[in-house]
Length: 281
Figure 1 (cartoon, rainbow, N blue to C red):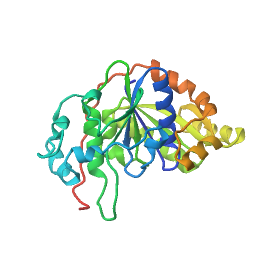
Figure 2 (figure 1 turned 180 degrees about the vertical axis):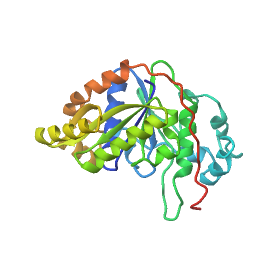
Figure 3 (figure 1 turned 135 degrees about the vertical axis):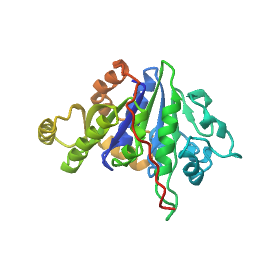
Figure 4 (figure 1 turned 120 degrees about the vertical axis):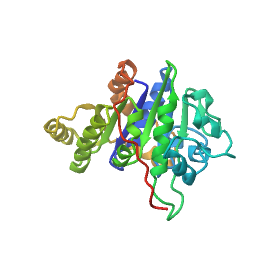
């Protein structure tokens, strides 16, 4: 499995899972590239133990308006932007990405697509289009893996981002809204021709809640991959802006780590319509 999308309702702990997976996989010898495709979360680099965030790929592509102009036909960033030719390549290797846009530490790297910085900036559709094209062209070596921290909700499915990954995982919390969204994610991933790998239950406070949640998942034929309980250590790290470390959570995600490192998935994609928002500017 080369490219994994982690999605779900806002606040379920997508970034937490991404950080835990990336840290453990890199510790096992994998070269992991985390793709920050969430336009609102600005602290993922801290969770990964990095000293600074990368410059956004949106700058590399010449900004939002330039992406909108060029995505209708092909991804061809405008002139005058440093390294812009990179995004014209049919295949982008990790080593092709300039250091300004890929922050690395040991076997772990972070790429950020773009962020919303001000009011009335417009919709995030260009960022979704850029995520899709970058992931489609990203070519990984045998020992490399990309984990995508998706924006909250399901709008990224409408932009076709999942057509550029191998599998989708949805993170849920113990709420009916979260479970219902997981059903929608499964349906959308299947329609996009992408494997729905299953569900990670997060922030589970007790065995009783876990049993009830499993019952709800079974009713909806949602495969539970692992359960991560509520850990004060994770809450403390998130509040203090420290690198995310939690021995108990690491033990809990071990079966998922084995799945990610042993399962081989086909890379072919079913045809899907690619769209870009033309309004909101």
